[in-house]
Image 1 (cartoon, rainbow, N blue to C red):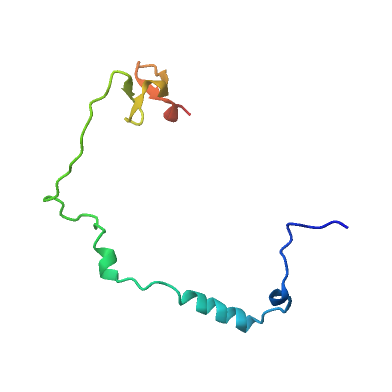
Image 2: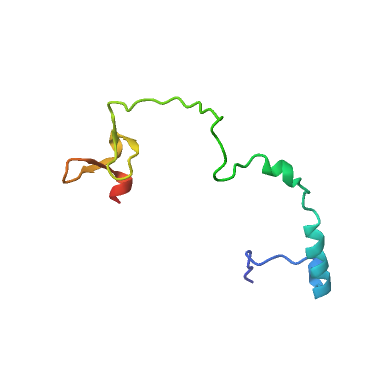
Length: 100
């Protein structure tokens, strides 16, 4: 006799079909487990577009382009020389991402 191991297993609880009312009650109970979150605390971490950021300071260490890197003429990102796909007709480099 062949056994279908992918078929869901039935136990005694699953044998009796649930009524629609029981399923609706379970769905409502499952939603009651949500965590109450204070909206003000959640909103503090977000910056709105157009917010005044004039007093903010950026601390980014900028490293100049290395000898084994190039700037793609299409996406203007700096890539390692192993990412060079070809030089276009103007002699400008194009990365493999932009070439495909």
